[in-house]
Image (cartoon, rainbow, N blue to C red; front, side, top):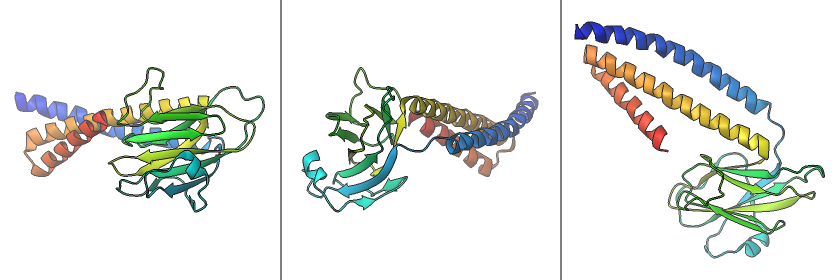
Amino acid sequence: MMRGWVRYLSRWLQQWFWAIGLATLGVLTGCQSAVNAAPPSLVLAQAWHMDKTGQATVADIEMVNDWQAMEGWTTWGFGPEPVWVRLHLRAADPDVRTPWVVVVRPAYLDYVTLHDPAAGLTLRSGDAVPPSEDSQESINFMFQIPPLTEERDIYLQLQGISSRTVHAQVLPYRQAQKQNRLQEWSIGFIIVTAVIFALWALVQWWVSRDRLMGAFALKELTTVLWSFFI
């Protein structure tokens, strides 16, 4: 009787397996459409500089003339040297009142410091920095900066023991909130999908004792735990 119940559960999970797969395809297509429909970035240019001394201040960095152009995701591997990223921002329209949001990924960066000399701001965050009471809850690092009516440079200082990989955006406040919610829902959907796959694989392994199916179940359980804790 136990075997029959397990086979019934297996068939039920298999139906959900295909339903979740089709839903995932639809969600990914919708996310891509939302990204393609996003307005132009507020960042006109990006560049990076590695501080080999580890002692440079923002005043020193403003004098640097050997910046390297960058675009999108960029990585510098492992190392103790701080990496500085310069973002050249466009001028804001005079009627803009809501703040801009600097979004920095990935979530495992240890120390992230934002310097906005034109606005007189220095903001700190990072995986190794306790969140402040007024920090914005997000799975990314998010800094609010004022929109100014002239072009300006802001600087990100990155340091840590993890891989120095970064992707930085500057978005209007409402767009940043929308992107944050979309990312949270997408990751939650992926975790739920991995749970369904893991349960299905466990049931299949229980019925067949197939080693390959057992390895797949273990892989899906690992994916669930990794996604949840990150």
